[in-house]
Image 1 (cartoon, rainbow, N blue to C red):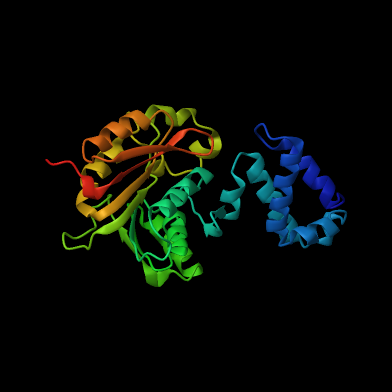
Image 2 (spheres, rainbow, N blue to C red; image 1 turned 180 degrees about the vertical axis):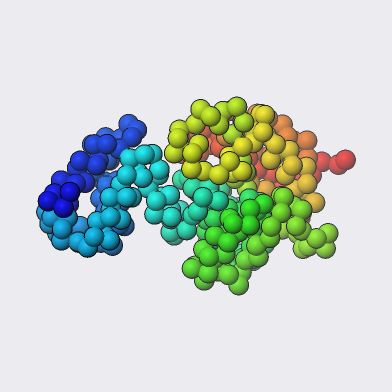
Length: 294
């Protein structure tokens, strides 16, 4: 193997990558992996691609070989690297956290239409995972305070590390438990509740692409028989945790707009659903100060 140039090695491995990527996309993936495994900048990689692999140490070439094999076996590049770009920052992820998707960034865009950036909003995220959503919101709302809840203690450890890396640990509180359960009755109410809860119907999970099915935690995917379990837990309780004029913003799956709207309508008067950039109805929301009477 060491007789190959780095360019030849990456081209060979690119051809073995799974999925329907174009040749250009395959080569770009391998370039990103090489930068990570060999600790090179993209410019360094460009200048060193024709070096033989023997130019690097055994430890470095072993890291490149092992990580490329993991990618060929279907493991996402973000999982191999242990990090994912989201909104404006890079976040650590782990096997205990969902690998964040670009669609979830739409919740941030929606929140920015609901409150002035300078507003001292109090934000609650249910199912905080890596913290990418809550921490990105805190970066945008610089006078805000955040609370994140997750059932997984391992996920909360990742959230805490990301908060420290971004200098936000003093503005966020992380609690372990099931949805609202860690909150005290005396907890001050929130201006904004956000969640990207598990919403995949249980029977659909075996049919998902393997990079999701085999690497995202089941806890973050499985929404029960119809995919609505989390919403049925969250929405009936949400109003009692929102301050007057507070908003709840939720991500949902394909074909869930009608049942989610119906569930929101049982507890709120003003309800909306909004599409993502692909035109798929992806987000649901409501306002607290127009809650329906019991």
